[in-house]
Amino acid sequence: MFEPINALGGPLEPCSLDPLTGFYRDGSCQTGPDNPGVHAVCIYATKEFLAYSKAVGNDLSTPMPQYNFAGVKAGESWCLSGPRFAQAVEDGNAPHIFIHSTHKAMLQLVDLETLKKYALDL
Picture: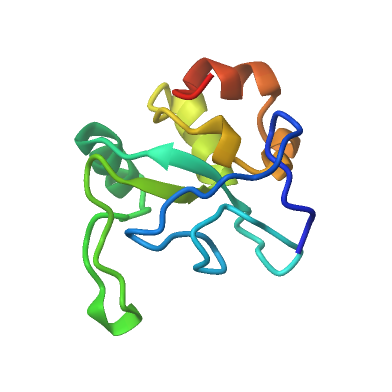
């Protein structure tokens, strides 16, 4: 794993413990070389974003009991794949994020000013 530092250079804060999120299912958007999807950005899910995400092939809202996944609901926080967030920015459909819970690895995909633009916790 990489050092647990957020996009602002401080300690990486938890994203969500209920539902339990993160590539490592530890509640944080910690990432590492074994996480090729770079699930490093902590989003605030809305109905609109979940519908957009499903439409572009990343269905976050449909439960998958076989993977112990209840599906993300509007109003919940979730560690989203970095490339998916970058795509949503490009498409004009990016969700709001919690920047203190977003790993600094996101800075390799999206610049800090863009992350700040969508941050709810600045």
